[in-house]
Image 1 (cartoon, helix red, strand yellow):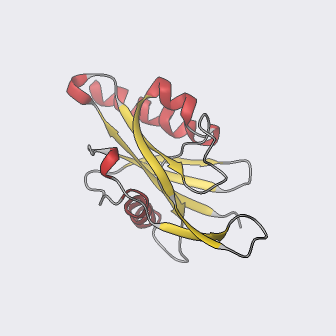
Image 2 (cartoon, rainbow, N blue to C red):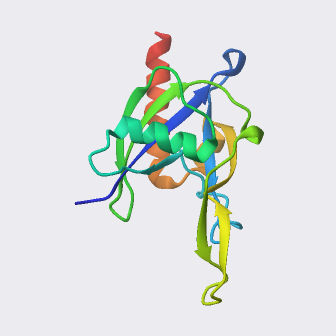
Length: 157
């Protein structure tokens, strides 16, 4: 069975302008010099028998330090090249990305050095307008933002 992750898309509409979405950039040495196509929605793998929305909320809080609140709107799922399925929900809110903080992980770095180093799971977070988000987000997750745009467009009617 394919691995499954769950995540949340935080969006805001500042002063009635174009919607912005919060994306996160993975921490660790493999991602430091990557930018275009290297941002994601906050997400993570489900624990056995865990409700996907509960997992999405847990992962969002672990990766941003912010407890998600509000109405959660389903965005469906997408599949990335590895076969992992990502299921997501959108919710409206606001926060200061500079105040966000992530949990950490430990890995051997440099490789084969025998030294363990700790890195943040997410090293930065930022709000992007949809056009810029398309350039930044990993291509497998862009469809989730397209669905959010449709959802927001239908909410205006």
